Length: 313
Image (tube, rainbow, N blue to C red):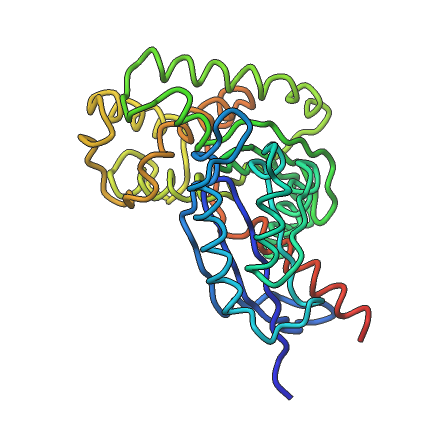
């Protein structure tokens, strides 16, 4: 018998991603073994005109899902889950996009709420980084929204989704790639205000570790490490490192003049917005150091699929 494969498809505001994996038993539970991962830099949120997705972003999304669909031929519907996040949540023409998107992918697409997104992010962290005795603050900065979760072991204690992200903030505060102190200050201030609206609900919980589960967190950790901006040198994200990085951006003055090791071209546009949101998160929650993590939404989706499959067999 071949090991059954499962697939999680994440229609994010910045990129569409797909992860294929299988269930590997361990003790009384299981671990997720990744088989393949795919990323399409669709930049869906950049195609929002007001609240409407423009034709080119619709087409980019459909083409990406068609490529994913070809790789999913032969998969049973019960082994695939596709989820759409903030940009599809807010788009006024989401039904137009989804009709053709499901046709191209070959599977149903669930438009999940911010709370469900946060729950899935934490499920992915809790499953792949088991730590029953540590209360964790998990931060997932996406292209269009930021999920903030506190949990202990597998138990989710508090979850909120804030409608700000690296992609939308880059577009709003750093148009044309111009980097200046006023824009960075304003972006960080607005992000702090938005995060501050929900942060009060977290004061009842004392967390011991901060984890960044998004591509933004991994990008920032890599850039800090590769450019010697993190004096602790452990591959983590630190507040002083983020401040040094913001100075590098302001010194460059424009994205095209920015020279940073470890920064891929397709992540360049979303960097300043993601940095501003992360600085706000650190400031509002009083974080000194954050551990970046690969697991997140897609691991949470796969974990749910595998759990459901185990119940039926």
